[in-house]
Image (tube, rainbow, N blue to C red; front, top):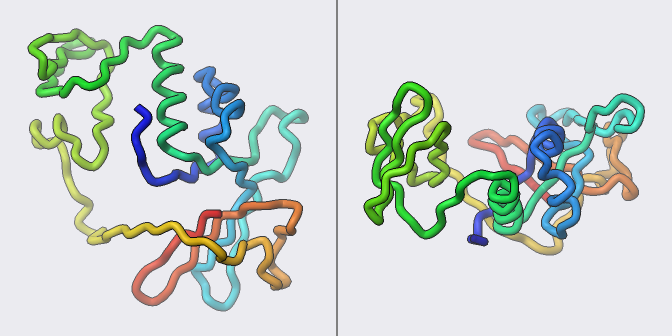
Length: 191
């Protein structure tokens, strides 16, 4: 860590989960995130819909109504360090070769020959999911024969500047996520 991953935009319930874990203050103290107040969703080409997360101040009812887009390399590193800070035993640079479930957790076998008993195991190896694949626990959703392609662009227009009567975003309420559908697919625009 850190390791490059494409950025990530979260749904707004992630913010209270980060707060409950104790990691929110660490994330917010970093430069890895941009606040997101909502999104423009154009599934109907005639009239896009708008979702605005920030409808009431957090201080009034304790509910976060915003989310964030993060630089995954830095964000993941913050979460890993936070996990270690609160007592999680973290292993880096060691391959997991097997996981054997048990009554209360399981046994994790590491590539260096060690075996570690774990109360909770997460295969966070991403798309590779080596442990899940080895146990034949990985499956594809048959209705979703999709591929994803990503690219960083510069000079694009921001959704808050779309001059339409439905657009509740303004230049002062920056960074709405844009999701636009077309006949054969859809795409996200995440400033």
